[in-house]
Image 1 (cartoon, rainbow, N blue to C red):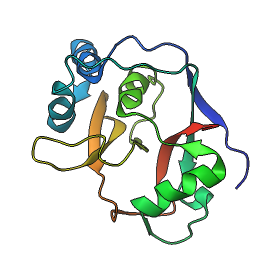
Image 2: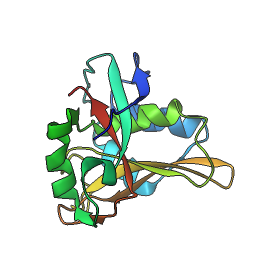
Image 3: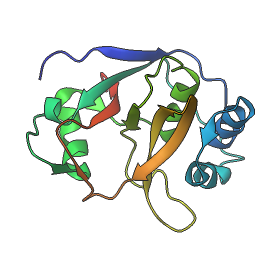
Amino acid sequence: MKEVKEWKNLTNIEFENGAEGVAILLSKGYRVSEWVQDIFARELNKKIKFNYPIKLARVTVASLGFDEPTTLLKIYDSLPTHELGLVSPEIALACRLDYPEQPTGEWLRFATPMKSMIDSDGVPHLPKLGKALGLYFVETYWAYEHAIFHPHNEFVVELNH
C-alpha cells in the first residue's frame, strides 16, 4: 500500500454526543436521514471523550489490497495491517460540519465499528456523507459483516491507529 495521505485533522468537535451533533446539523440546514436521527436519539445523556488530534484518511478497498468485491468484515480486518483504524460514528457528524468542499455527487462512507450504529429495528448501519441537489446529507449504509464492497469503494478511516 502506498503512503496514505491525511484528509482531515480534527482538533475540536463542537458537540458532546451524537444527539447534540444531529441537532446542530439540523439547525444548520443539513439533511440528516431518519435512520441517523433514530440511532443518535438514544444518546442524549452520553458524553464522548475524543482523543485529539483525530487524523483521518480516505482509502479505497483496492488500496487495502482487494482487487475483487469483498466483505465489510474482511475490509475492517485488514485495517490494522496498514496502521489504520475505525472511527466513532460521531466523527462522521463532525466531518459533515467540516466538509463544505464536498463535490456534488460524492458519497463518502465512514468505517465505524460493527454494531456501533444500530437503529431501533435492530439493523446495523455505517454513516455516509453526500452532496446532491445543492444540499449536504448525512445518510447511512447497511453495515452487515457480509455486506459486499467493490475495489473502487472508499472509506474514511483513522490514521496511525
